Image (cartoon, rainbow, N blue to C red; front, side):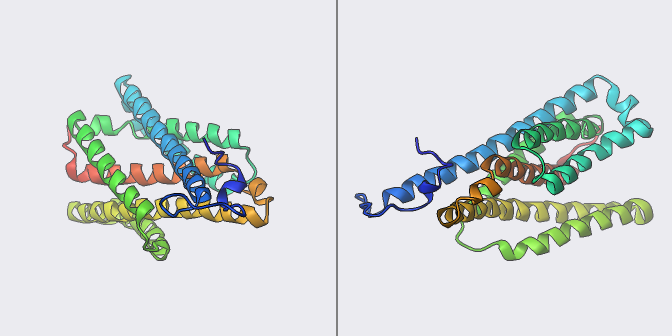
Length: 260
């Protein structure tokens, strides 16, 4: 199997002959490296989602969700804010942490998310949670495939979508503290699904282009390999797609979820 970390796989060697389809062998090796990189991201992301689900279900079944998370005490605030702390630490400190350190923080983040999301097993019926999860998984797979294969440049929608996320947060706070409108809540949920659906396609393409840009840069500047370790890119890429998946799931659950 080709060494996907080898910068030589990002270029065609002098005198390389094309294969029967007219493509250069070096291109096949390069594409194999890209596929392996993206598969590593998806594996991390899926493992994180699975870990979150297991922790969430066990925490809810233990009775600790009601006695701790929903109690409104200081511990409940720590549990709810812990995932945000992990995201901020990983995002702003990724250059300071080692690859192993980022990996450990990713798993810690997945556990913290499981604790903070355990309330859904108290609020919603397990059947509707399961149905929403599989609906989200199917939508995520299709959107990510679109982002990976489309030749259309999606970078222009990135800023718009990120601004939409901040708008969602503000709207949710206003509805929670001021309006308390069920109709407004449904509108927010609908927009949330659309925004994170778009971010799924956008982030997939961004991660693909990020890998291609780094591999191309390695040809002229091998120091790029040290500045952008692929292990870190895999973890941070998995974090991005994880957040897209979880948020799309939570907003969709507001539509499809049957309350207890």
